[in-house]
Image (tube, rainbow, N blue to C red; front, top):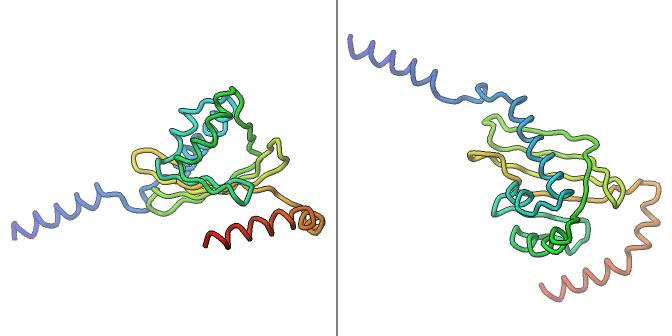
Length: 171
């Protein structure tokens, strides 16, 4: 009987001490993610190369607005370094952001509207938390009003066909 009592006490204590999905304070985690993303954008506007890339994981991916812009972390650093070295990278101001979090509180995805030098853009991405939140994947895209999409297609048609031809040759 003593063993059963010890077992029940052990199970009760164990279940009280382990994280369950309900233990995650999503509001707190979302605020932490907001801080990471806000600081990340601020670091770019202040041309703080180290802080900007410290917010990203070493395996992160950045996808830019041009069809050719699909960079792993190393390639994105190489592309970005000259902009940061000049003391002026880019300045994205968040208009709105929505953050989603898994039940375990260690994986998040988001979308945001940004005011940029290119006009209104959309950013979306994924963050992962080990000991701290890191950006794993980010996609920046231009927003194009539906009523002018035909004009945009005409402008990009030639460049898109050249890009596609190059891709087909590589594959």
